[in-house]
Length: 182
Image (tube, rainbow, N blue to C red; front, side):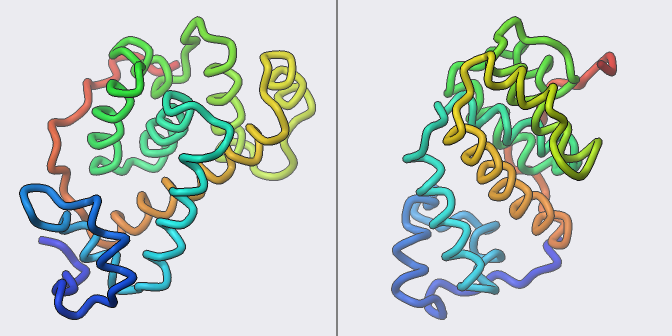
């Protein structure tokens, strides 16, 4: 049972309704977004960042790499299930997804640099190590990519921790279990 109340569509502003329109499934706005709508300001900010992220410098597979990894690190089952499906649609096969989540090499130096950066944010807070930054640049990541990675982390962290408050239950099949720890 969700901990946050679901805001009825009739109580939402026209702006929020327009933002939520793409989330409709079978004619209904996804319940999780009606719960996020308890703060229409936060909802608007989230969707603005998502729109900027999607028009930024990262490919969909790179965005989904970040979203899978952060959801794994924070233990958000709802987002992990959702982004497993989205990552597949973005071209990340099951073995690559497991490697991303488990901290193993994907055999894609650019994806590996992204995961190393993201893991650094959580495992070693503070200034990013020069070696991590240098590796990222040597694997083709630009300054725009680096800033967009932080935005991707921000958007998924928002949904992850809001889902933790809400105790949001997954609506998608669970992702494959990680059998080793990298």
